[in-house]
Image (cartoon, rainbow, N blue to C red; front, side, top):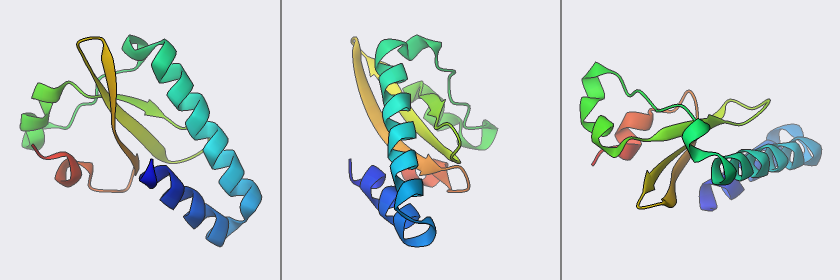
Length: 97
């Protein structure tokens, strides 16, 4: 996933290879949790101003020790990873349908 690579590269440049590796491990752990327990992840609430995103019923999983979320959805027993984003990012503009 390109976003994951971009974030890891950014961490490598800004904080070093060890931090980048920790980020990738945290992402792998979050993705593993999602694959094993998707309905244990809370639903993403985009807020009233972005209520159109509610129809997708996105769920979210945080990365441990990093300010990133993985948004995904479940459709016909298939998981779709939609986006990995830094929590300061404007997620609504990236997911508009």
